[in-house]
Image (cartoon, rainbow, N blue to C red; front, top):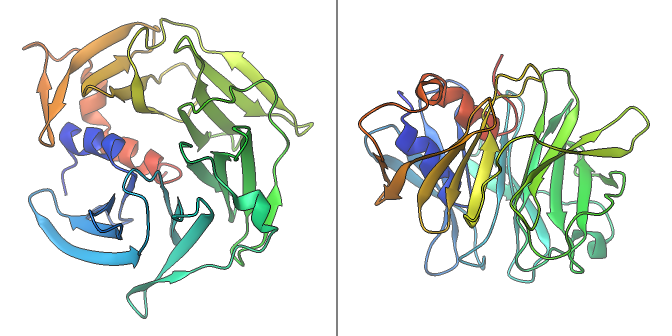
Length: 283
C-alpha cells in the first residue's frame, strides 16, 4: 500500500500502530468506548478487518506495537495500570497474553505515562514512568523474562513525552521533552549508563506536544522530528533544527498550512517513518 502523510500523522494520535512486514497493511491500535483494545487493519482506502486484543483498557491508554520478522507484540497498561503484553499467534490468528516474568511492582505504570520502545537484538525494550513518575526501562526476552535497564537520572517526574529507537549502529536512544519542550537524547553507552544530550535547535516552543518521532535512525544529521500537538497542529523540526508548522490534522486528514511542500523529505519516506514507529525501519 501507499503510505500517506495522513497515515503517519494519524499514528501519532492513537495509542500505537505498525506497518505489516510486506507493506500491504497498516495496523491501528485503538481503544473503543467499552474499553476494548482493538487492532484495525487499513489498506490505504478502508478498514478491512478488526480484531480484539484485550478488554478492560482505559480509553486514553498509551501503547507500543513492536513488530519484526519473528514477533508481533503490543504493550499497554491494564485498567489497574499494570504493564501487559499480548502476542499475535499466526497459526491461531489470535492475540494471546504473554506472561511477563518479573515482580509485579516493577510493572506498575503511572496513570498518565506514555509507553515507548524498540527492538534490541532478539529482545524488546519498553520504557515508561513508574507510579512515582520515574522513567524505567525493561528488557523483555521472547520468553517473557524481564530485566531492568540501567536507571535514568534527572528525567522529569511529572508525565512527559518520550520515544525510543535503536540506531543504525545498534545503539539505544530514548528521546524526551523537558518542561521547556527542548528535546533530549539519552543514549545508552558502553558503560551501561545513559548519556543525556540536548538536541540542538528550536524545540517545539510553546506547543503542547501529544506525540513525536525521529524521522530517521542514523547519526549523520539527516533526520528531523515530526510531532502533533494536543490541538492537532502538525509540527516538524528539520535537519537544521528549525521548527516548521506544517499544517493541521482533522478527521484523519492532514491539511497543509501552505501550498508549498515545506518538508519534501517527509513525503518520500513515509513507509520508513511508520516502520520506525514499530521498532526499527526495515533495511
